[in-house]
Length: 308
Image 1 (tube, rainbow, N blue to C red):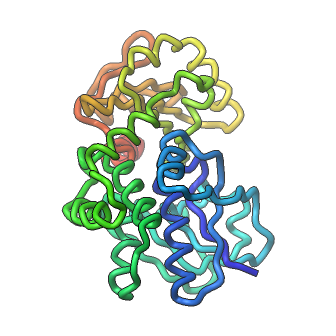
Image 2 (cartoon, helix red, strand yellow):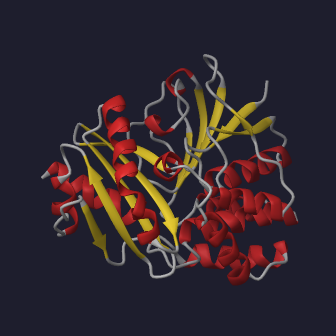
């Protein structure tokens, strides 16, 4: 049986594209693996898949006991397949914090402070002198563009930029033109229900014993999104009650101006004010100037607020 490779629930472009690229890499070194996904493919990722004529991985609902798996773009168990604790984790390739992670056997972990998992995988190809084909280069550069917001995110490093430049040549794209078109495709949510805005890129975190979920939506017009604030609040309240969350933070990121407008719902919403030195408005919103990264700007600040 093949070893499954997958990213986190509510997969973003890095989770899907890194799984695809890592499947190719592992196959090239002689391993029997299969890329999978833990949720629906979003519009941004679909743009990349269509552009490079690549099929999306099959959906994986749960794994059988002792199934061998490799995790990309995540390590926290609450973000992974529901019964991940029963799987045999062989490898983790990631660029996030390490939390809520435990295995019974030794595991290979490559977790590096770069802007994207795809950057690490690109380095692994180089280290093994394995040629990256055009469609895989397309997957990797799409992931880097997505996670770095076209190199504007504070998580972006020189390694990400250099990797993207090299991959653009292989993929035969102009990174700025292709990247902006891909981001705009993902930002068009006009045909999606509010529930998809909220949960499409949501992740759960444990913060000092409290369950926190953070959903992020990229857009070119936050004001247009918040015209539906009453429906958004209703959907979030249902999620809070069903999951027993202390806080749901909805982060609407303006990809043109590199700011975010957040909506904080839940009994622990005061932590948002403490974390970012802002005052929530009467409808529980606040503008976070210069904040675009959940990983580097939102989660660390919120975690410190919960711990204080």
